[in-house]
Amino acid sequence: MIQHKIELRVRYGETDQMGFCYYGNYAQYLEVARVETLRFQGISYKELEEKGILLPVRNLSVRYVSPAKYDDLLSIQTVIKKLEGSRIVFTYQIRRDEQLIATAETELIFVSSKNLKPVKMPQSFQFLIDNLS
Image (cartoon, rainbow, N blue to C red; front, top):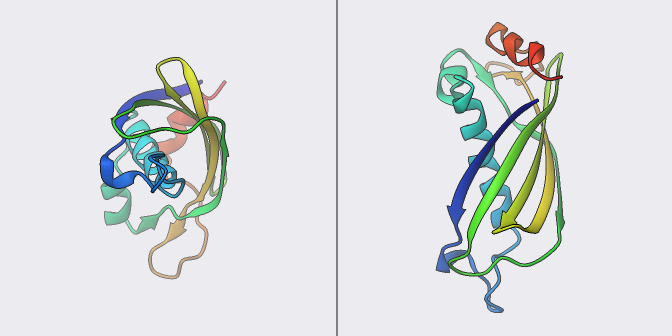
């Protein structure tokens, strides 16, 4: 299993009138976690883009369990769930201390920057497939 954990703190500007972390910010938190998970595996989004490969999000789902608030330190556990053809699927658990805040899943597609058509994953991802089980 390929997994990685990051921590980030909810900033004041990320909260709504009720003092809760605004739900739309979770997509950004997931992006940070996803990028850092790949970086931890030696894969750089920047280098992929320089090679003409983009990774747009195809699907995003979030299940909110408990609200995060200003100054909460969140830990995001990211797991690469599936990697096949032109798809990569990540799952996430977001926690404050040990309390579950949210679970999420994103599916991204490898596409050519020239025509935005799906392409096979780069060879640099092959070692990840070997480590998925």
